View (cartoon, rainbow, N blue to C red):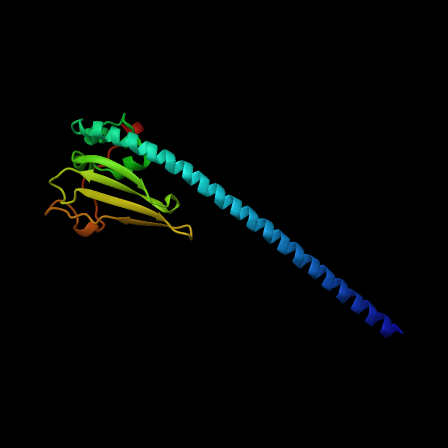
Length: 188
């Protein structure tokens, strides 16, 4: 009888384990259905947010175009914006470290700056610098684009600058800039 009692106890535990496993599987399936429902709602909310952003980006574009028309009428606007640290362009903490005095000379020829969202705004944007003819490079437009990839990385692509002879680096290869950087606002 001792062996028979152990056998019944083991069979009862196996049935109980199957019931627990079955209940657990059902619960996990229900939980997954709820999670899928939440994901669907979150995707819908994201799409709605982008619709609203697109609507307002379209409205902003009209105002930016008007602003660009006025900027074009101001001689050397971008040079002034870069040279005067009271204006936000060079007082920006990231930009002031990137631009040299040589870069500032190039800004004399910058006619406008455009930021364009990709058709699917979730995927990225492009910044286009529009230049007047200049002694530095052949290009009239230089564009840098940022594409957001699914795995959380950002792909960055830029126009290869066609430098005029003696004016820059070939094909955008890394180089050491010869201009001196402007001091941060508090360093003067």
